[in-house]
Structure formats: structure tokens, C-alpha cells
Image (cartoon, rainbow, N blue to C red):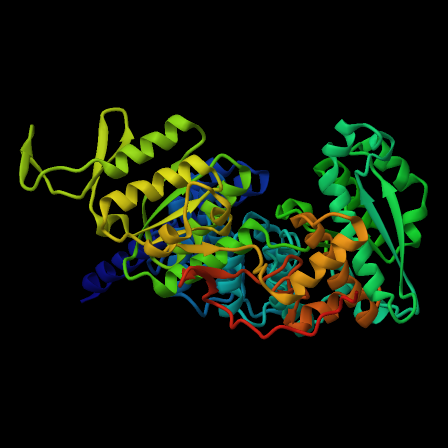
Length: 603
């Protein structure tokens, strides 16, 4: 009996000694790993911690070793393994006392690896107050890798109380060009999280000043010194027409007492002369600036406008770079982006096929229009089956040939391919082509005012006679090669800049008044000058020198000669008429045409 007890005691001693030795080995590995970890030798640290990833009752270092192993693996580039190990700790030991530290590292890794939603969720699950501060610092650093506002907006919806995210999203919106800026969302974030409004590009509505008289500077390339020559007179005739339209509007605004005082500056289409005007300091006394027209002088004044908080208006430009991110810069017309978005909305609501074809011309604004349109359609699950640029007569002719080339029914060609009549063989690369049916083409957008490209596309589609819907520009109305009858018969939808009814009595009376005053008929630039000064002069008088808040909240406003204006949370005109020929007259599809207003012109 005694010998049996001795045997049992011996076995217990051996097992205990083995367990003690195992614990000593585990501890040794852990301490070695920690030493290497502290010294920044993550590869050796990882090798030691790896030996402790076996979960058993003799290994008291499993969780700590797993935690440090995951960090070491990440630091040595083994990122997938790091995420796996830390993720397992969160899943199997969510109540571990160090789980918040795990969350910090795991959330940071996720955000650095592009998983914004899960990363924010993990970081926001941190419970200890001191570690919440660290989590916020991690978010501040890692959010800089994210530029997509739709993605950040989605993250905001999933984390509605995240102040760090809200501030970052507002900052990213604020960095956007004015034409893309989501002003309402930025306002919401600023108000909801009590963010510092002064750090964002907002015009404080409380500082606007209503005056008895407003000073308006007109910076135009009048080139006064060259007016005596016939060459000079012709070269800037459009500028003179624009200026004369502005002066008529000033007369009207001042009909019951002077409310607008006009100051004219000749930029001479020269950046140095524009710089001298700026350096004179006279513009500091102005409430509004009209112009300049050309890009370099315009950019100089735009920077000056932003720095000194002076509103400026460009009467002719449709380029979003003219306003850029300057909340004090406005366009009288619509940008290519705004018009493309309106066109895309029409297509989404009215086109049966989810396929689309896009052709665009050589002008920069054509490609801006085309790619904005493409982006909007693809966001609504449209498929752009064919997109081609026409930057030369050869390219335009190739599009014509592709659109008109057809094949006989059930004709088999080499390789056993069967082509069907009324299809399009589109070249997509050297030796490669696509066969596209009417349904595959869907509808066609032609973002171009190039006469040859437009004529070729319309002729080709007229020849095909398969009623493919077409969207284009209202400038096509001025093309001699295209008749109103053809536009009506083919059902062409035209995206306009602003509806301008030349047959209205208002326009007729303006023409007559202009003729009597200047002994000639007005040009399009005369109308642009008049409408710019009349509309924005009215905003000055009604809302003060910082008329933005009134303008942003007014919604649609009638024009005098043009159909109307809308600057709801925008710095370019949001009124984009969509038009069709009906009964050989131009009709708007997206606005109700209003009755004529009493004329403001007198004999």
C-alpha cells in the first residue's frame, strides 16, 4: 500500500515539475518577446510571441502574447495575419480587461487598410474615457486617407454622434469647388456638432450691410486706346456690347434715385494691368465686381475677392474653375457640371433602356459635361456601352461610319459570328470591334457644339431610322445645316443655358430701346450684360453687399429677358432648361413657361 502511494506521489511530482517547467518556458518566451517589442525589433518579437499562441491551461500569456503578436505582425508587414489575430481576440474574449487596447490597434489597422466603416465601428466601441481620447486621435490621423465624400457621408449615417468624423466631413465638403459643395450638409454638421463656423468658407449673414447706394466695379477688356482703329473696334465689340447692356440695367435700377454707382476699369486683357488695378486699392471700396472675362485676370481678381471678401460675378463664363472654392464668386450662367447633372436626371427619369452612348467634342467643357454625365448615370446603374471623343474631322467621320455601317440578317462571317441588320460595328482597339444593336446603344448624348460632329451623328441616326433618343445642346439651333424640322422629327432633347424667348414683347422692347440709344441692334452679349447687372444689382439692393444668404434661400426667381435664375445653395445658375421642338417652336420640358411681365423699358 505504501509503495503504491509512493508511485502516485512520484507521478504528481513529475507532472507538477513538467507544468512548472512549461510555465517557466512560456514566461521566458513572453519576456523575450516583450524585450524585443520594446526595442522595436518586431520580427524577433513576433517569433517569440508566436510560440505562445496555443490556448491551454498552462499558458497564462495567451491573450497578451496574441495582442503583442498581432501588433508585431502588422509592423513587419504581415497585415492579414495581424487583423486575423486581433479579430479573434475581440470575438473570443470580448470581456478581457485589455479589450479597449485591442480595439484601438484593430480599429487603426482596419482604417489604414481601407475599411472605414468597420474601423470606425471598432474605435467607437472603446469604453474607457482615457482611451476614447486616443481613439479620437487615431481617427483624426487615419481619416486623412479618405477623400470620398459619399463614403464619408455613409460613415456619418452609421456613426451619427462621431464629432471627429463630422468635423472631417465638413472640412472635406468645404474643400470642394463651389459647384460640387453640399452646402446644406455642411450647415447641418456645423450646427449639430457646434463646429467653429469661422473655420469654414461661409459668408456670415449677420455682417451684410444694406446701403442707400452700392458701388459696383466693372473690370472688362475695353481696350479703350485701340478703339480708334477698325481692328480694335472689331476685336472687342462683344465687350462693348456687354458693357452697354450693363449700363442700360444701371439706368433701370437707378430710375427712382441712384442706388448703384458704376466704376469702369479697363483690364486691356492684360494680367499686369489687372494687377495694377488691384494694387491701387480702389477695389476695396466696392460692394461687387463684374468681370474680368479672361482666365488669368479672372483668377487674379478671384483670389483678391476671396481674400478681401468682395462678391464678384462673371457674366459669360460657364467654367467651374472661375468660381473654384471661392464663396464670393458667382457665375451668371450654369457650369458644364450643373447642366450635365440636369441632363442626367432627365435621362434617368425618361430613358427606358439602361444603356447609353456618349460622344463629346474637343473643348474642355465638352469633356467635363460628358464625364459628369457618365458619372451620374453609372451611379444610377446605367451602362455606358460606347464613349468616344471627336477632336478632329477624321474622328467625327469615323463615328459617322460606325453609326451607319449595317449587316445583312443572319449573315455568317469568318469565325462563325452572326451579325444582325441595323447593328453598329464599333472599333474599340487595334483589330477589335463591338457589334451594337439599338438596345445596346440605348440613348446618345452628344456633348459638343462642333458643327461637323453634330451633323454627322444626326445624319447617321436619321439614316438608321431606329428612333434612338438623342440629347444635345441648345446651340444646335443656330447650325445652318440642321433644320428645326429635323430636330423635331428626331425628337432631339436640347440642354440649354437659359431660356431666351426672342419673340417676347420684353425682348422686342429692349431691342428697340437699345437701338434708339446706341443706333444698332443688341447682340447676345448685350442681353448678357443687361441681365447680369439687373439680376445681381437687384440682389444687392434687396439683401445688401453680402447677398448670398438671401440668394441661396430665394429659390427660383424670374429674369427680365431670360427665363429665370436659381442659386439655391449654389454659386452658378441652377436653371437649366430642357427643350424640344414642338410645332416648330421651342418648348421647355422641365419648367412651366410663365406669362410675360410688364415691360420696364420706356420710349
